[in-house]
Length: 249
Ligand SMILES: O=C(O)CCC(=O)C(=O)O
Ligand SMILES: [Fe+2]
Image (cartoon, rainbow, N blue to C red):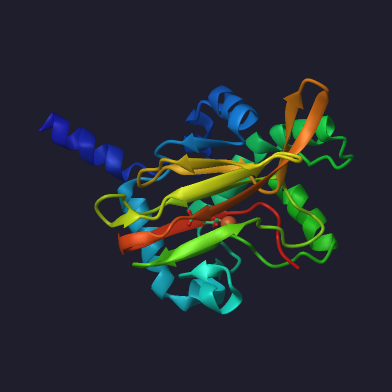
């Protein structure tokens, strides 16, 4: 009886976005981002939350636009950009994650010799985006079926770009879908690209560099260029929510 009650309590407690972001091992995340340009944030969403967010896909009231990837040469599959106001959990994660990633972004820019610095609070960064004419929300919900894939790309939507982003896998590999792995490539100057496959379970998030990041070499710091995408789904259905911190023109 006690175990059942505890289980029920754990499932029904409103675990705020801020609380769960505060529990992440940020030292480990910062180390992973520094070494690989990406890192996994385990179990950011419960299976119930993943299912609830995936179910939003069918309801166009939540979205400002729908993109069919094959029409633009982006791959195969589709996605929808959320409208403001974002669903509270996604909006809450967006601002809580930003506050933890902004110091990393500032350190990267310093090392890459880029003068831009990011404010501590996401609301202040969004105000800068809006002043620059980047008014449209960028968080998105992606949907893939058998044979679908997402070509390697960078999510840049205007002059202002926050250098890190987060994607959360909403479906369970091996059960809801097969194939469909999250892939990153890292292009070093005058060298061939390094591939990285990021293993994710349902509810896990990956934080990664949007565009470029600094790497220490023997002759100082250089920039590597990153792209991300998704390998071909072999079967089933895969949903992801993408959290991009800059808004779009
Ligand atoms: O579906 C994925 O895992 C990748 C989604 C993506 O490209 C993004 O969130 O920016
Ligand atoms: Fe993307």
